[in-house]
Length: 342
Ligand SMILES: *[C@@H]1O[C@H](CO)[C@@H](O)[C@H](O)[C@H]1NC(C)=O
Ligand SMILES: *[C@@H]1O[C@H](CO)[C@@H](O)[C@H](O)[C@H]1NC(C)=O
Ligand SMILES: *[C@@H]1O[C@H](CO)[C@@H](O)[C@H](O)[C@H]1NC(C)=O
Ligand SMILES: *[C@@H]1O[C@H](CO)[C@@H](O)[C@H](O)[C@H]1NC(C)=O
Image (cartoon, rainbow, N blue to C red; front, side, top):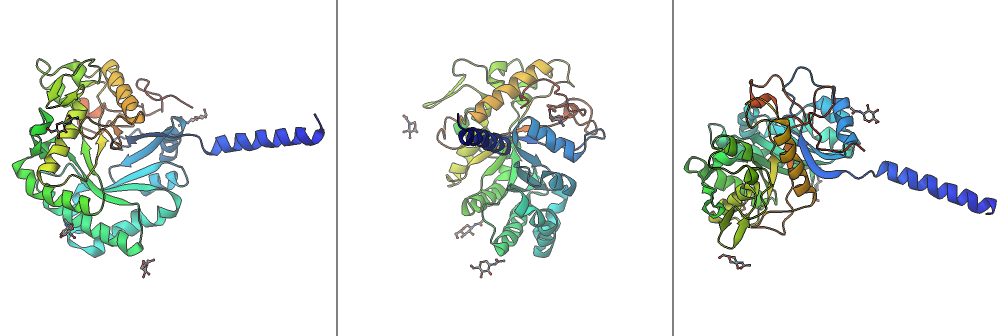
């Protein structure tokens, strides 16, 4: 080999190496970074942990500028939440919405990709529900004033917003949620934003294990468990997401996608069903489903995104299962293996 071609080969190898180094594939899966613990690692360590396990998306339930600074130029998509107790002021004051946005989002926009801003978490139905739409509108107006496109405003709801999901075609908004949900989904339709839904088959299963099948809750059924018209359901998560689609369609909205903003399985805290083995099975199957981009029977061609709850066990949450949703211990070791280190 001539010395010129040797140099060329070395150069190409170096370029390839560099290329691989900077474009290391991130998994198209999110994890909620809940911070209700007094022993959690520093934000910089947490961000490194996301990178070490190729977790491509992070959801923050409330703004935290230390975390946002650690995320700068980090190639991790970020969802950031307005705290529930901040909804009334942001809903009633365009100026407060501007202050919130300028403090927690605007300075970071050149340095990272924000996916969603959530106006509250699980506040519909409830006393704060009436503030969700005006808060979303005020934040959207700030975004519009900056001409930022691609940043979506939404809110995260749970199954309490529904009455009936079994079978999914029975899905409809609960009476005490309906008026707010109709306004919210019309806003989401107008702005091409998705509805975030927190979906926990664990609670449905653990509260009634005699009647709810474990394989249906854990994505391990090998034949359909629920037949709904011509749609077959092998797992409860799909059924709950589709119940939200049915509920929206009954209000005349069929263009809004769902995003699974929280799901998981606790590894301890109730003795019987909260075990590391069951948590591992659930979260491994969740990961498999979402990185394979398997959507739901009702909207099989839609892109469904998913976020696991959560990154860490959180020792300041109420005792019991609440403290034990984490994939990782506070020292960064896995509670049980789900993600593979790169
Ligand atoms: C990330 O991986 C590197 C290389 O293996 C290791 O040195 C570092 O401690 C890891 N960081 C975390 C937070 O896991
Ligand atoms: C946003 O776009 C409009 C119309 O193109 C323009 O007049 C305005 O100056 C832009 N605003 C900002 C903050 O860039
Ligand atoms: C959605 O857009 C329609 C048509 O522009 C408008 O009449 C309606 O008020 C909007 N609704 C919300 C909640 O933004
Ligand atoms: C399934 O049922 C729905 C509603 O009855 C119908 O609109 C649709 O065409 C059916 N799809 C197939 C593949 O049969």
